Amino acid sequence: MWKGVPGALLRYRIMAYVVGVLLVILVCVGVPLKYLGDSDLVVTVTGVPHGWLYMLLLITAFDLGRRVRWPWRRLLLIALAGTIPFLSFVAERSATKNVRAWLAAHPEEAVPAADEVSAR
Image 1 (cartoon, helix red, strand yellow):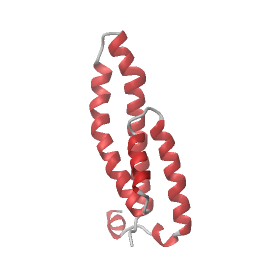
Image 2 (image 1 turned 90 degrees about the vertical axis):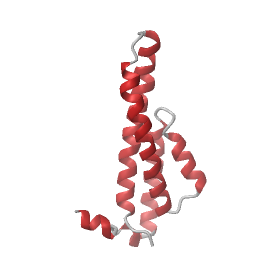
Image 3 (image 1 turned 135 degrees about the vertical axis):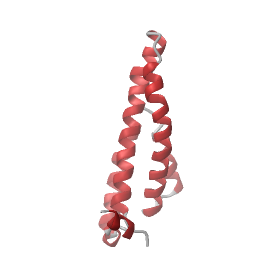
Image 4 (image 1 turned 30 degrees about the vertical axis):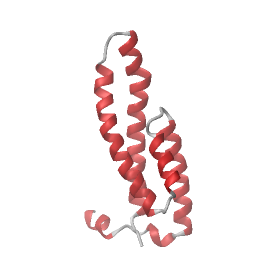
């Protein structure tokens, strides 16, 4: 059995928020500044970190999804949510609700994994 679902959920939630905030800044501030204000500083400063952190979001989403046995379709939708402004927040909320319901049905999975206990 997979353990450590709460830790995986926390990692996913953090990455979803960080990636979501960077994408909103990139699209709502950076792109208008680049094309209307002739300044690509915000695009450069937020675009590259968003790309790298999006890869970490995919890893944390996959880790969480495998632990709670999500179907591939749900994993794909959550992965795509990180590419549309504001949608990563909606996906995070939906995933959190789903995982909390899953944990209520599988309380034995709420126990941290051995590697998470030793890291504390």
